[in-house]
Image (tube, rainbow, N blue to C red):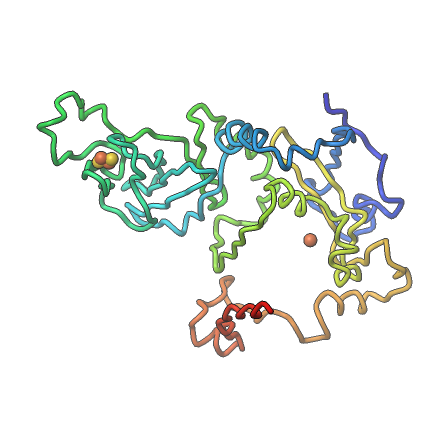
Length: 327
Ligand code: FES
Ligand SMILES: [Fe+2]
């Protein structure tokens, strides 16, 4: 059983809640939640990060049972827009329907199991590249060029197997588990925490991805704590209050941590710093380093004259350096 604890193993510095007490404005209620949970501190076996058998269990119990992020809604605005999603050797397709809804299917042909759709894009149908069995984008069976040789197929019941799909705040998710708990239940109370942010109205202007040669948990863990900021990102210590971050467990599925920005780390000697110094470290000297101001909420498209006038320039393409010749 997880036991909620308060006040233990905390930085001796001012707490996040005490920082809020000092604020001249009332913070939103959600920031006043203070829900740490003690999961114990027994060592975790290193094999969890290296064992192939353990990873296979994670595929079965985690990746194929949990909601997986696919794309943003605005990436598939029109009927037929299809996203191919791949994870741990499994593939799904998510497709926009004529009524504006979304459907998701396992991306496998029901004939010989070939991957049905190989690339994302707008589709009028899903035609298997192997023998041409074809499905409509709503998953119903459409045609089989050799139907005369498959009298056993009941075309009414030969639709693509559907899997759960859901979206929240413009983010589209699928779940390979047909019995999955609905996304809205799993995500709760996330929507309430993001109610002020209107993220459904946002759009993706850049997608940065990197394949990291590490166990997936080691990578995720780097984003779940601020203890490493002092040593790994010392340039932030002047304006990020790292050691007094607050960690909360809000449900079976949702955790968060809150880190105050605009305050020096309690790990550095900055008690007598004026606010201007902290602001300058965070934003640069007055007038520098700030993004251009957009007139109506959205930044202009990267190629628009307004964006060019703002001083924005695309980064020059980088070439891969030639490795030195071994001696
Ligand atoms: S495997 Fe798809 S049509 Fe044969
Ligand atoms: Fe970091």
